[in-house]
Image (cartoon, rainbow, N blue to C red; front, side):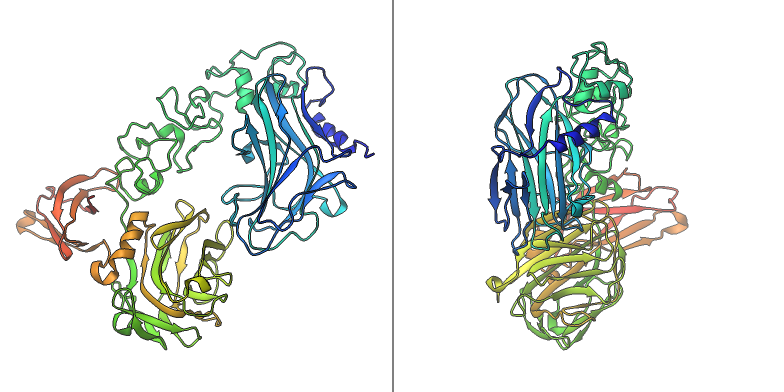
Length: 635
């Protein structure tokens, strides 16, 4: 029989923090399993995985060797039996394990917990107090997309050394039914370099030593200036309306009334995710930015009235308070109102190519005309398309577009051949930091790559452009924001994939449509209506681009603005020209500073057949040095 050597490791790992684990009568065991006698009653759920969890009686451990069978969403889950809680308390999960999992933030492994038959909830990285997750936000096509996890190689793996991870405390009540689950998530790529890719040798779930029986372990009280000899669970030394016991269970600081320094007392941050009022904000007391919109929880008052960036009136639990498809921070940065769904960020066209008449004339007016080499005109979705034969001799050269914090690239395409090969939509010549490659990968997935971007170079969608879509038109749009660190793939106007990724601007140097200067990546088939925008388009805007066509609308943008001087500095006017559509109405706003304060000049300007002119004759006197205008398409 295996000796309990790893329990000694677990105990030693906790002694440094002042706890003698499981050596005091007040500690309560919920699970203590080293798998030396049997599999512990754990069960396995397999989802398209080549090597699901398996019990190794000789090793006295559970292990999996990962999966790379070419499918997305390859998962294997190891689940404990149901565990009945006998006593109220804060329970920790401690486990001995080792892993060698594909790096680069592609694959990962994570812990989940279910209470009373509820769903298995992902245990956040912040809930680990010892040897927690070590990856960035994962980018693989699986259940851990955008989340942190265990990845890479654990220390000493080759020598058979285990590391000890601890998470918690998790507050359970007597009678609760608890289960834990270990998820290995793999995508289409590589396996780890050593086996097993993940092995779990021992698991303990229990409370820790608590001399005074007040629900807080001794090490916690000693580390946080509390008294481990006296029941001080109900005290509130930092006067934040949270008792010491609740601070322990919530993992907040009992000596700091604002543990996350977001401007809100711990006591009002109830963690429900629902804003009730200033005394019950629903925010996370351990996160300065509960909704991830880059605004501190403390400035988001949910008043519904936008003043400025320091008082945006937004909901601290909603990344997009007005539900218009743009995050609150994105709207503030673009000087639109994050509390008004009719106010959205507007940008402009970088370049637009309808490919009518077999040319690559830039319809944006920016002069980014392309040069057609080898490709020939053919029938498109709107007018003509350019047909590429898949060779290196068919392409369109494009000039240097510049650097952008946000980018939308959209086009219609029809795959007619070269399935399973690299096929370029648009690639910058070469491959240096910040440069974009936008293409169909060899695995037939739509890909978007920015060299040296945060979180890895590459991202992909999930729709396959393989034999199943031959000779059929599909619209693709890829929307990137370094401001929000997001990337979205749309196929036929429907969101295919949304990834948390990036942070770096994108460089659109001289490039090619339909091929790459490096060779061997020619697109085979027609491409039509390709457009580059300097903003992250919303779902509605993507749908509009898909359905309208560049030749009809030239997209929504201000195309010209000019000052018409009056006599002696009086009766000045400004004339705006903007793209528009018959049947739509538009609002025109003016500001003297980009501070979020806009004066609405007219909210009923009728659209025209492609373009509308608007004149502002009510200019301030004296005329300011700067004037800013925005145009909003009304619902």
